[in-house]
Image (cartoon, rainbow, N blue to C red):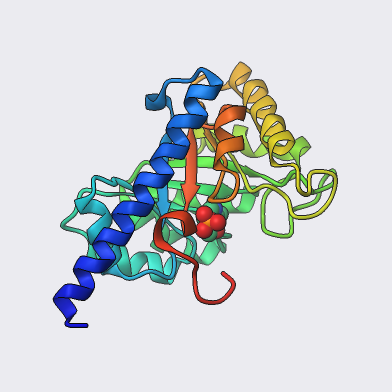
Length: 245
Ligand SMILES: *Cc1c(COP(=O)(O)O)cnc(C)c1O
């Protein structure tokens, strides 16, 4: 297929996928009696090229997410001419903080005090204000961290309080990934209900921290039903990623 036709084909494919996801979100909002405007779709572009991000932007997508700093930094630079908000959703090492604050508007995966310190130092040095979400590991026991990152529910308040007073950081809310193991395995609705409870508790002391980031391609409907404000959707919009990432 000539390159131009290929791009046209890919554009049509992404547009159709996006329309299907949009229908699912609208139906889930309707069923839950929620306003569609209260739910934001973030498209997870990890492993997909700059050209796909340009097609997404052309279709009106403004919120994109990545999970690896090296890829994210490169794509954000390549797409600097587009008005996009970049969300970082992967596990983050403290030595990547300086890079991430240069392009990210939000980090969804803040899960320990040392990372709060590193992000604060980096954001301040870069003259940036970074929105932070506390990642909650619903499958982690007291004092532990999750397999895929995140702090146990009883550690959320300490991380949130640290973000709230850290220069250069803004506490925006909470995030989770539905656990694959433990009591919540195969029960995304129960997991997201638990996250909503944690969010309500957090807002008693931090009323502005109202982002609830939950729901991916498989379970975005349950996330909307449970009250999520931000959905992180990759596969359903861009297709199945080659390899496990
Ligand atoms: C990849 C990823 C997503 C998107 O997952 P899909 O199943 O492709 O929709 C959402 N959140 C995080 C943290 C991810 O790493």
